[in-house]
Length: 327
Image (cartoon, rainbow, N blue to C red; front, top):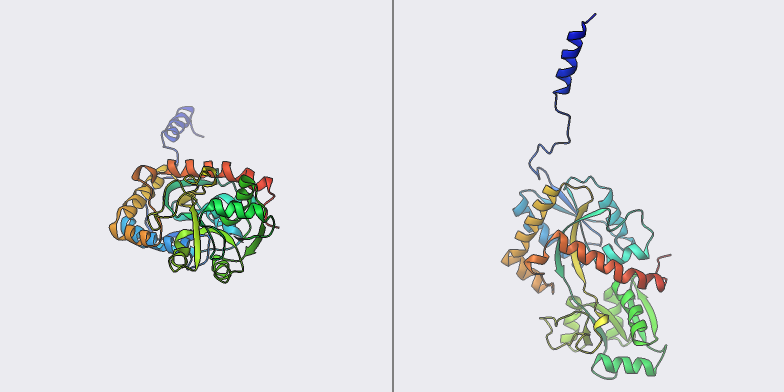
């Protein structure tokens, strides 16, 4: 039977052993990283993700594999990212649809602000108001006057429940005192074709994807939903210039990781993103896509967190008041 002194020696020795900690012994990253895209391959978010993934591989020293997880306004993809281990090996890319409006339009089992850790604000892609060639007038004020003179007769395309095109159309009616029919489409392409064919009157869509149709004279552009004019179409005024500053809807892209990811890993990822966005070849490709890059001081986790929170606070009440929900 051990003596009291031997017992005390054993106890003291055990207390001197440092407690086990979840150490990050390996140098991050030591294996491939998955970048979850909440939309099908080939769309603007997917193309942006693949451009970033290719260059991030150089900065991080590991492959970044794009995984497309589409459906339910992006909520399936975001849910998968939220449930992933907070170890920096699963990234979530998204924008106004998937990481803001989906939270009000769909029932989710996660909190967009509490369950994701912001990494970086990536790009902005302006939206604009476009319409069929036969619409009377040349300005947004002309369009508003025509809508007021013809209540419930005009048609406006929406792209999915809770999409920016849908939410902005509802907001536009509220702000301008107009009334029109909302026509749902499964994607921007069929809406554009119907607008070219004169079967739909108006829509608010990504400017980069519809610019060729404006340049070719197949559809009209009336106003940018941004604070400043778009470099690719500098002759199109902003809603603010037209006396309607509240109608802005910046369409931005961001990068997140699951909540609880170590700060050192978030900082490592942010540094890699900043380096990627500074690459002249990457910048050129993004500009050609119609994307605009935020200033360096806005490419931060804090800037993304502020933008994310502000847009949720602005658009969710509007969506809930209009009962914009997916059945």
